[in-house]
Length: 321
Image 1 (cartoon, rainbow, N blue to C red):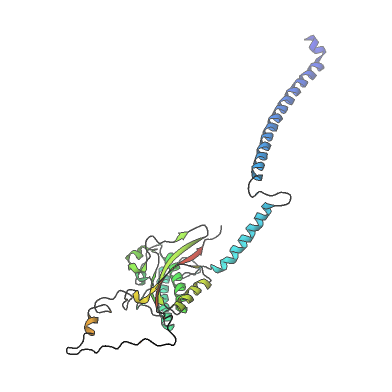
Image 2: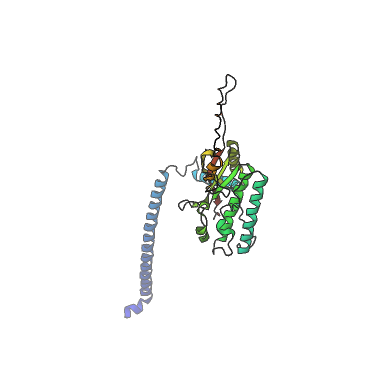
């Protein structure tokens, strides 16, 4: 102890040196571990860089900046999308209140008003429409309380059909036979079957839009059909004609006054034969057959009226996130 007392400062200095050496060793060890971890991360980064550089296309080099090119292409695509939106203007629903959801009274009033307007427009433009036709809304026409949650989808469908009929009427087709839509309400299952598409034909949704199908059947000549297709093509709304089915109107089923198959007493009833039964004792003279024309121009094309069925998809763009 006497030696420690005589060399107290030396002992204290040695103890401090040992503590400092221990701290230095601990610090060195921690930094050594950190250096190893950083080296491993650097090696992994080099491996990722090598893998990326071997891809096709590569991020680029000192001459080509593919990342910058990709950003420019993305901006160009977004600009093109914004331009194309002008050709996919949403069809406004009927009714289209500025605030709040559609109410029952608003929809029923708008439905009756729209049906009357379509009949008047068809009459003014010389387009034949079945009497008392409801344009696929027979189930809702006389309802007092539509099914809950159906007013929004029905309003959108009413707007779509209004826009489709406007194109047909402006093309001055001979007649509008029928329109079919997708069932969107429980009330639709109580409506006439000819108002609705098959259960397998439904709206399709992708990453950009919803495609809503409609089937339209009308009669016209080929010139009016061309006008109809041009009307869909030039419309600001997103109409896509998915299919066109054409047959001679003479081969189509006979239709009654209300657009249904002719029954007894109609064009196909037994009275038709009684009406044209010859009077007893009278024998009609044979009708002379026309003689073939000699020379002159020959008829090359004798156009007849067509019965056309279109499947039209209405494109409703999804809101961009």
